Length: 617
Ligand code: ADP
Image 1 (cartoon, rainbow, N blue to C red):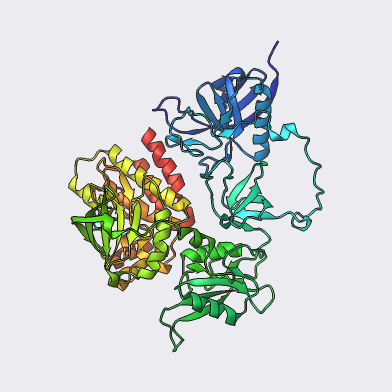
Image 2 (image 1 turned 120 degrees about the vertical axis):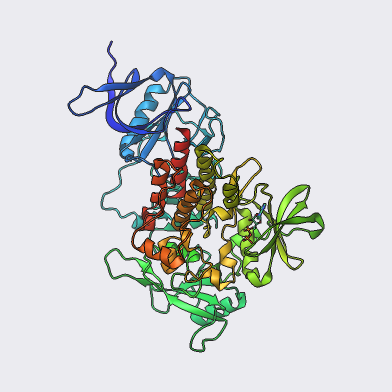
């Protein structure tokens, strides 16, 4: 009896990388599912189809959609996986319907096979499973596999009335403000700008939501915004029933630079951001004082929100989120949300429990390692481990602000970031304890080993930094001063990112203003030089320059040119030249990082993926 054809479609297949050396690529293939096998072939106009692969259905152990938290690098964006024998085939469907059809049909045909009990909901990428971080490709899955599938077990609910408006029926949709990678089995991955159905928002931090595939799980509520636009009572920065005078009272009492809240204006339907600052004002303004900015809306049909300057956002939470990172026309960026019920946000309340104060008795200081922006760096021993101790000169940094932020920085923990262990504030000068990095800073390391580093090692260094930065990006943190001088090297030549976020505490004007001599213009994106507009994409620009430094063995970029000349050449569209030692494939990535428009640059997640692919070749 001939096999019966069940489905046919053109989809994209990712190379299965059965051998370590096989390249990672994405190819369009014509897939046919019949009652015996899943086959795929290459079809070119005017040519006979060329069979490229065949998977017997009896060898299939799992078929499931892939929940991806990284951008998909091919045109079809709906991935599913077929685990057969010892291999994973990733197929990308053009739309969700097509994907569901294939997953359902494949599940149906394989339901009596010897199936896995658990599977991996995310991709195998860069030597580990993105869902559970296991580094063994054949490691057991981390999520229960449902061989029948939710959709085919239950009768489908009645189709909704096409006239029905979801919001009116009491159904609340939320939009993901950023990607989220699940931390536990009960969490759901979020993809920026996607919509999710809000299931339960009783808990103040974690809401349960449902994605368009019916998966339900928890997500941090700060990562999503309610779609109806102005229903954001749950945000810690929102105070509905507060007038201008009460807002001023609360913020002055809080007394922290950048303490802020969003409140209802007197004018119905309008919102105001009130923010506390100690910055000197013009025209004899009081100091310290509270400034009030009305959130404005554009006239256009697609109404968009903005504050002091025209950076437009489709929701108020997105606007607040942006200004938490960028002053962009405000007197200061929005640093500390303050609410009526007590000024401590949930986050700060939790953080106060983080053990970050180091007992000076436990610390022994050794010889000097170097000196930097904030003062001397000494070798030290703390609890039987080597540490680097930064002695912070008080006149060089704003200590109060730093103490607040250090708690957040301590929470950033990744093998490609130089770990901050804690802070010793009991003595002056205050000191910070960092993981000890035997081989010092990357720029010196490169210069000292000129002519000795292979291209593989250089690629490995870029890969290390992109991995650390992909984590910084996914933690919603900005580096703001990424450069080879701010990366350090371990005894086994691994590179880690250091000094993230520290420029915000520098008090030296020469360093903080883009017009001044010490500002890192040569590593800065055009929008940072022009408007101090920082984002993950401005970090990406700096990463491009860092790659250039690596492949030029620690040479300074634009060696003999002044900052003004560099700005002029950037304005004229010129870029750093390809380093002699860089392969074209790496130079392409540098140029991608230096796209004029921030949104045209890749994310770190994508750069990491691209670099990992190059290192696999
Ligand atoms: P700052 O942040 O104050 O500018 P740097 O980070 O530039 O200081 O540190 C100055 C020097 O101290 C570096 O060039 C490096 O040689 C040394 N150093 C800094 N941090 C460490 C560390 N974690 N391990 C080993 N050496 C370090």
